[in-house]
Image (cartoon, rainbow, N blue to C red; front, side, top):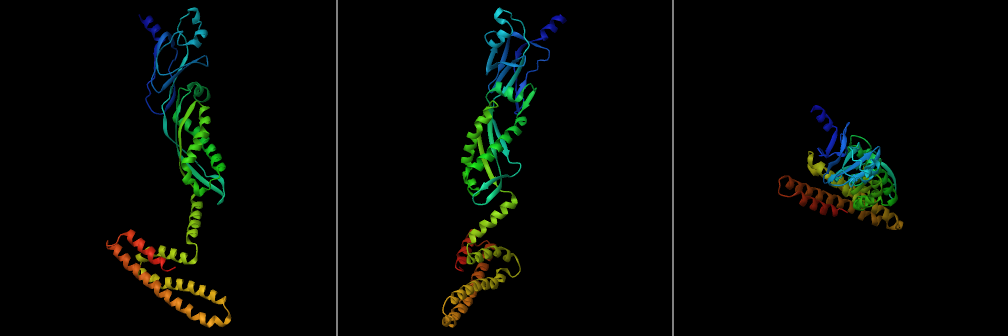
Length: 347
């Protein structure tokens, strides 16, 4: 009896795999010294495929379903095992299961900035990151190219290789696109579609199908972003008059927190605006004949005085409005709108 039990344990008549986690792509069925019984039942569940490997070569691939291992279901092994001559003995082969479920939310990103040529800024170092999804579609190819005879092959084992392929393709795409960095954020969807098309054949080489690819963000390293912010700010300033308004707008919230409030910046603002107008008037006067100089001096002086008074009035009004915001009578949005209106009158 003990001998019969021992003999029965040497043959496998049921082969199946129940996935216990979400991270296994390939799994080698534990054969040890066992042999597969002729006519054994192979169960391949939905989102799985199975591969029979005989003497190091892929013999057959099975999709989802219940398969009885006979000469009809193993045509390649039929010749190898002489089953065409009714030799129906147990056989020794390796069985690998592959998970074909969709792998979602796989992340990619540039570990270091990549350098591209930009028509606005010259050479630019930029970063990018996003997500992609894929699934295994050709287990025979995946076995030959990637997983091999390992007992298990995990999703994480493949992530590094795929991420490097993505970054290499992305660098080429961004460099060849000719899209300025400033416009890249507005073209992220288009970049994602282009990357999808570019990577499809790369994934197919390994028996994989790329499902989706998305570029979520493109950015500059911190030190370059500060330079870009400064450039954008200067472009918004445009001229000295607008620059004065820009500085004043930035100074008002800080001044309101200090002793003396907004009134403390009135004189400086008036002087700044007055000096600017005085310089402009003086330059205009220099363009006129010398005889007209005395007549031009009086309007310039008057403009300086008027500008100073006007600036003081604006600052005083803003200080009162800021007090209303602190008391909850006026909203921040209403204050910002009124501030912009008053500062606009200084130009």
